[in-house]
Image (cartoon, rainbow, N blue to C red):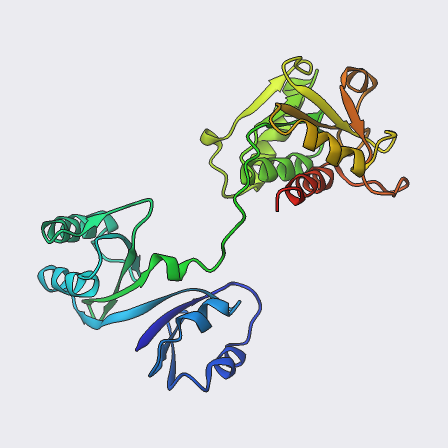
Length: 309
């Protein structure tokens, strides 16, 4: 059995990886930045446990001259025992073919055979890659079951009742960190400010340096003051209640809408906002060097999540 391995992008020595697999792998070939290995046994579980391996596919068809009729036949033979699939493509070299044109060739053909596309929960991933050598085009077909590709099983937590508020942010990196956290945990970000024009300039720069966020799908709002429709919870080193009281608060208000309110990294919460809070908590025993706002938010989310797992 041949496997096509995609490696994670951290500092690693491929020879160390080869040594980890040497007793179960007959041959190693490095190709186009990937690793092709051969084994006489199924080593799927071993591959899933290796930090070096980002994902892997089983090679079904070695490189062949590109002919769409033949490609469709190879695709069918590869996943004929499955009912649903999704296609992934890779063009190693530039050529006048697009992923969309590949879909148009393969999808109707497989649908006729009773195998349909499922974008959300496919049984198998059909991976087709293309390359060009000496003006000739080639393809290779690989596959893997979706469940075998899922190395990480993240904890599914909902933060739908949390609304993050940052008061008068001044630093690009500060907003960038909040954008990232709110996007990852699917929480709205509210910015309370009396200087919206200034903050907008900082927010624009923060968006530019924060990659991977689909801002059209994220809620970011400017607000003049805290809303009475939420329980308003602030965090400051001057509060008298600590993490123990915070846990009790979360337990008591598990289904309520809660605003998590943080001050900027320079001045913290203003007196006006402090006076408008319903609850206030201090975090960590450190007073001289308290957490930055983004660190405080991460810490609070960890406390909330720890109650559930």
